[in-house]
Length: 411
Image (tube, rainbow, N blue to C red):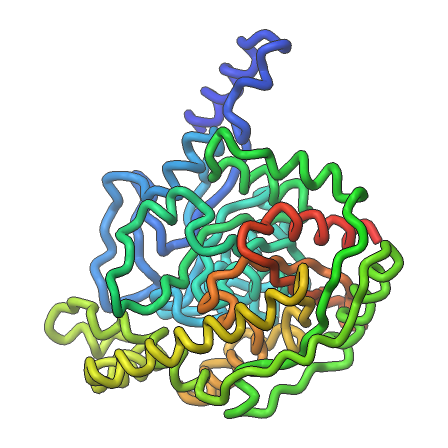
């Protein structure tokens, strides 16, 4: 409240002619997911297995949002260590979907998505290492932008990977109800000298004649059957119709993926859990999914991990080559409506992970490649649940993706 009052004073005491020079998010309420340190707040990482410490300083992304003038009103729910596509843990109540409170809000930025969709905050910055911005945004009917690898300065400033390290998958990006709001929050993370993404969104009507490839292919279909619901197909068809009406060329992409992806991705995705330094007995306080993943990570040899990283890099090069034939690749955002709260846990750890991959079969691959991607709602099911699409872009095409999302939502 003190920060908000200070922002109000700063605005009211400034000359109206000078207000454009004020911080771009000055006075806007927001929130941060409970994986990021926020000064004065406890960070739980969604886990009972680690100490819940009060942060003495902001993490880099939180600091950037604060510097832009936004006022955080708290922390939002996450899955344990952010490893799941839903936001339920043993620490606090689950994040529920505002469109149907019996359903999941997605994850790992699910608490943030729920807060934005419910109108508690106008927008926020989430993080995405396997779909964690796009999954909850799609589940809650939001625009969710996953920037490309190293596009956000505070992400790029982290320790650079060494030779042999896996591709860095985690990035920070905006979640909002409109592309313009998403662009406003995204601009707050970017270098001041960059062209403003809000200006690009306002010029969205000028974008015509792109070559857009449609793909239902998933790298997980070699392990599990991937089936898109009728509503997912309607959302995709609506997007195709809108984009074609605006003069874009839409075609089936013919994209196909290597069958080794499920094993390679999963091995690399969970490998960081082996490095957790837990106190004696803390393993027993892990949730079922985290416990399974950690045990598997601890049993994976360095040789095997290196081999899977190498396979993942081959996948990266092949997927980037295929996607690069198009200005953007259009996919369903999710395969079906958000499952009910508790649906993942009811299946046990193995079934939990399978359901995640079946629900969001086309998100993690984008993190491996490091490409930017965005989700936008294009349909509402008979049960009132939002459904949407994902657009995958070329490196550096975040502004174009925001423009396409604007076209879809205006169409």
